[in-house]
Image 1 (cartoon, rainbow, N blue to C red):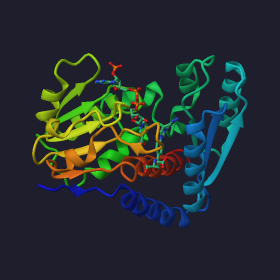
Image 2: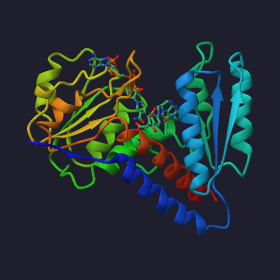
Image 3: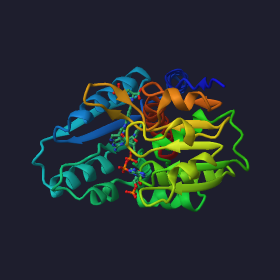
Image 4: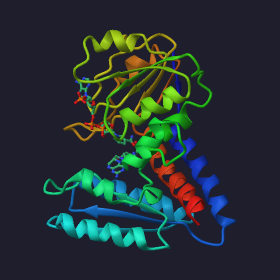
Length: 277
Ligand SMILES: NC(=O)C1=CN([C@@H]2O[C@H](COP(=O)(O)OP(=O)(O)OC[C@H]3O[C@@H](n4cnc5c(N)ncnc54)[C@H](OP(=O)(O)O)[C@@H]3O)[C@@H](O)[C@H]2O)C=CC1
Ligand SMILES: Nc1nc(=O)c2c([nH]1)NC[C@@H]1CN(c3ccc(C(=O)N[C@@H](CCC(=O)O)C(=O)O)cc3)C=[N+]21
């Protein structure tokens, strides 16, 4: 079997074009502000990509770049100012933050109605209790990519239990009537758990950890991982070539989930703007 490649880049472009058309019909440009603290090198690329995609789709987008030695109090004051600014619809605090800042405190400071990352406990709680709210961008993007895959009654395995990917991913799959297993670093026999999955979502941050024989023949494999190898190559958490021999459909890295994360950030920002204005 040779898998269908799920083209996240193309789906994301389509999604952004739809948002652009909707924004063209509004009397205002939805406002997105990305707050970046310090100079984490990976963050630079993501922040630029977000800004470019946002502007292209008609958002009023800007990045506030604070120095590495910014105090927690100064960051919280900056967030409070953005919470109070009526032109700002979405606030994203780029992670990771420098070690001296309490990440959860920064997340909690963002007004839930402007929390376009969907990381605030109010939004996480809404997701867990089945209420409408802002949903984290990466899992939301994955659900777009799973359109056309039968989810009702499907056995889904999510590898990873982070607040930003694994947990919300599991909630969305559960809401879509999957039978969900969440696996993590303490899981016994990961390979056997994965081999039962009709839908396998890998979000562990371990280059090519998921081998071909972990994949159930005919499964849909979603690779969230983005890992930079010492030689500069970018790979996912799944050994792509091996997995593609068994899967029915699989996402590549790059060009899979990553572009969807950005498109869904914009989708969340438009949702937040419409809900709030
Ligand atoms: N495509 C995109 O848009 C995005 C991609 N990413 C990428 O997704 C990956 C995961 O990100 P994130 O969730 O933030 O990562 P975290 O490091 O926060 O979480 C990783 C999770 O994987 C689990 N894990 C780690 N090692 C193993 C292992 N050997 N076996 C089983 N489970 C393991 C951890 O388990 P435990 O909880 O037990 O420690 C943890 O739950 C990264 O590669 C990241 O770069 C992230 C965000 C967006
Ligand atoms: N508050 C916050 N929210 C986030 O959503 C957030 C964050 N912090 N910190 C970092 C992670 C990572 N992340 C990605 C976004 C886009 C791509 C992306 O566009 N990837 C492309 C290009 C990859 C490349 O060439 O480098 C792809 O996979 O094809 C990847 C990863 C968002 N994150």
